[in-house]
Structure formats: structure tokens, C-alpha cells
Image 1 (cartoon, one colour):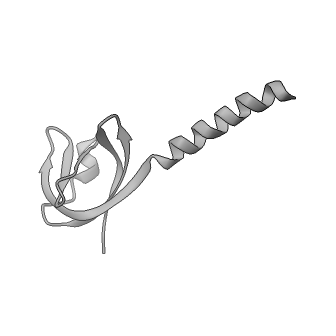
Image 2 (cartoon, rainbow, N blue to C red; image 1 turned 180 degrees about the vertical axis):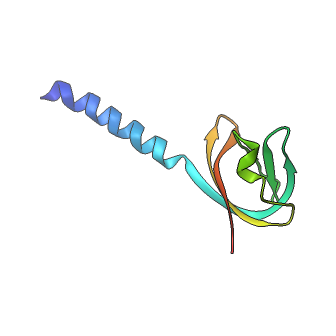
Length: 84
């Protein structure tokens, strides 16, 4: 039983750490770069998307909410939605 306890605790800790890395940021779009697939918010934060279509319907000045995760020093965006 004790042999199983340590691996289970390790798996649980890693699962919690992974879940804690997601975040949401809210702000106005300051810049859009479809070629680099990035959106910059008015606080200067730069978010990387895997597909430029994710933000194709947005323009500079739009208030948005971006769900993202850290990938090293970069912020990888999972989704973007209008903020009302």
C-alpha cells in the first residue's frame, strides 16, 4: 500500500500544478499581428495563438477576455472572447 501512496501523491501534485497554470486576462486590444499570430493587450501583454482565425473578428480597441497558459516565458492563448 505504501508503494502506491508516493506515486499517487506525485500524480495528484502534478495534476494540481497543471490546472493552476491557466489564467484569464481582460483588456483592450492594443495590437494584432496575424502573421505572428499574436494579440497585444493595452497593458503590453503579448498572447500567442495557434490559429489567426481565433481573433479574426476582433479589432484594435475591442475589450476582450483571453484565456491563456504559460509556456516557458510566453503566454499561449487558448481562447479569446468579447468582454461586455
